[in-house]
Image (cartoon, rainbow, N blue to C red; front, side, top):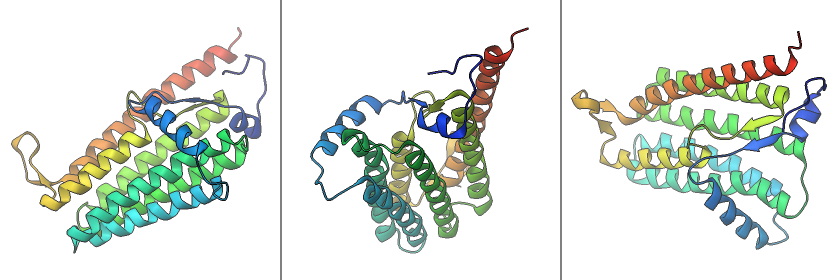
Length: 235
């Protein structure tokens, strides 16, 4: 959904009426599973409960990674379990609202992304404190992720278009990658990419993630700039 060339927009209108683009590998089966579960959710459970679960579970992810620095056999399984709980809470809250026709578009958009920002910061802080990730790499990764989020919010406001994935990756696929990385900590968490190293797995992952996030930022920024130029340039 795109605004007409002469249309004006407000932040409320942009977030309330934006189109969501989600083309990740697991998007279709995930949507079916979420709707199936939402239709069977007890009436006493509402979207706010699930949003709270998403936030608390991400705090648990960060704390579990911190614990994994000294006790990987305890911290790693807890981190994976908290990632699963975060998927359930974060993915189900909006689905439940739509199934029950109880949407609050601006509230939901704002709350979901505040939780995402806080949760990602807590996870990376936990990794940095664990000794499994260099604190500088964790900080740079977080900065790159915030750049992508900021561009995404601007794109949603300016074009009423919110992209939830890039290529075949979305939030669910990223959670799976983090969970796999966590499990690899049980074996020491060291890797030898292309025969070099050893390096800490999450250091390598952070560098790769930063490079990917910068690419996403540049591609989306260029794409949205060109689209807006074409929509609003009439001379």
